[in-house]
Length: 340
Image 1 (cartoon, rainbow, N blue to C red):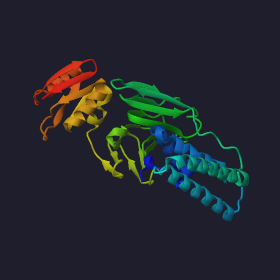
Image 2: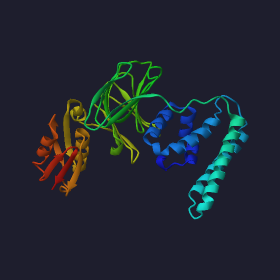
Image 3: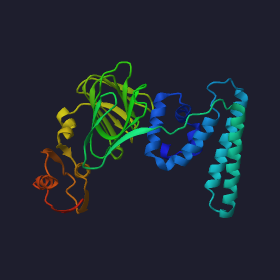
């Protein structure tokens, strides 16, 4: 089951989610913090499960395991009961009553845990973050508190916690960025992007992790990094000019080699295409120039583009592509209409 299909009960029974709420595993904490930010529509189920788990943290007190397991089963039964009620559509009048009864049972169950097992006040789930977001068509440079530098690509978002320098240096990325990390052996530097974490001491590397691409790529320029699949803990160690690619859809994690100039060309304002199909070209042009395309017709199925454009206007790029593809185009504000 995919996480975005989880119910409250699924979150409650997920060991990784339990580690996140109870703060017992740094990797799980980082993964779920990022996932929750990317999936706000699951806020209600996440908060409900988190409250239950947080209310019976048993990290610092011995407990009667038999009673603990009995009460845990009651919680699960309550959640199953609530979910069954929510899916009943034939008896709408009864639905509200079932919902209220399930909610009361859930509160009572939480109360049982609070009375029998609660130990210490739990920390709030909300963490203060500093954030930098680039819209489409905009690139920027971000200086981190330790002096590390981040070149952030268009349509990309970077976050880091308020206590960035106190422990492990952690940042969270959606999109693409190039990192130049200040060396500090006692405080590893980790980039979390989707299911992938990239950890280094002092090095430079590129991470590309646009959610809509379903592919995360890490490419090392200098130094040494460890790239890890947070979900199953598989990892690769990269040396200079080596890359790691993660296929999110198929959960495939593998090394790859590529032209470093092509990977890093975006930093100098150069668009590079290598056997790119038409949808890929349009997607990158939309990010690069902050436009939306409207297509009337389509190119041939065998169409592909190889070439590069150095600091060119969108009009010149479209004219260049038009040498091999016969179409007319019109640019109106942020909209580009292409007629084949």
